[in-house]
Image (cartoon, rainbow, N blue to C red; front, side):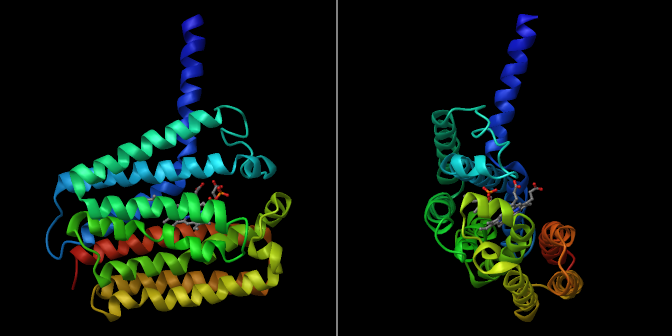
Length: 298
Ligand code: HEM
Ligand SMILES: CC(C)=CCC/C(C)=C/CC/C(C)=C/COP(=O)(O)OP(=O)(O)O
C-alpha cells in the first residue's frame, strides 16, 4: 500500500517535470528542426546519428528554455486561467527544483550538440535559449506589445538549427524557413491573445489586444497573414521547392487568409480559438509539404 502511494507520488513529480518542458509546443518546434535537417541535404538522407543527436540536443534545450520561462513567470502564471494549473503555481515543484531541472536538461542538450553534432549548432541553440528564456521572457514580454514580433526570432530558429546540425553552415535557404516562422508567429499568437485578453490584462502583460484593442489586433492578424502568404512563396520563387510545395502553400495560405478575414469582419472567441488552432495545423502542413516536395520533386 505504502509503496503504491510512493509510486504515485513519484509519477506525479515526473509528470510535473515533463509539463515544465511545454511538450506540446515543443513537438512542433522539434518537428520544424528535423525538417531543416532533411532539407539541408540536396540529394539523399542526412546521417542518421547526426539527426538523432541533433533532435535530442535541440529538444532538451527547448525543454530547458520552457522550464526557465515557467520559473521566471510563476507569479504571472498564477494570475492567468490558462496557466495557473502549471506545476510551479500549483506548488507541485519548488523553484529550486525547476532551476536545477532546466540547468541539467539544458546542459545535457548543449553537451550533446557540441560533442555529437557541431559547435555552430550548439552556439546557435544557446543563443535561441537566451533569446526566448531571457530576452523575450524577462525583458520584452512585460514591456512592449511588439514582444512576440521581436521574440518570435527565437521561435523561428528551429529549422536553422536543424540545417546547421547537418550542413555545418546556415545558407540563404535556411533563412527562408526562419522567415516563414517569423511571419507566422504574430497571427499564431495574437489569435490566442484575442480570446485570452482578460487573462493578459489581469496579469498586467502589454499584449496587443490589451494595449491597442481587439479591432487593431484583428487587423494586425490579417496583415501578418498576408505577409506570411507572400513569404511562403519565396521557397518556390528561389527554386528551393517545387510545384507540390507551391500547391500546399497556396491552399493553406488561402485558408489562413480566409479565416483571418472572417475574424477581422466579425469577432467571436470561438472564431479566434479556431484561427489559433488552424495556425498550428498550418505550420505542420507547410513544413510537411517542404519535406514531401524535397523528396518527390518534379
Ligand atoms: C514568441 C513566439 C511564440 C509565442 C509568444 C507563442 C505563444 C503561444 C501560447 C501562449 C500558446 C498556448 C500555450 C498553452 O496554453 O500552454 C501557444 C501554443 C502553441 N504554440 Fe506557440 N508561440 C510562439 C511561437 C511558437 C512556435 C515558433 C511554435 C512552433 C514552431 C509554436 C507552436 C505552438 C503549438 C504547437 C501550440 C499548441 C500547444 C497545445 O496544443 O497545447 N509556437 N503558443
Ligand atoms: C531550441 C530552443 C531553445 C527553442 C526555444 C523555444 C521557443 C523559442 C519557444 C517559443 C514558443 C513558446 C513556448 C511560446 C510560448 O510563449 P509564452 O512563453 O509567452 O507563453 P506562456 O504564456 O504559455 O508561458
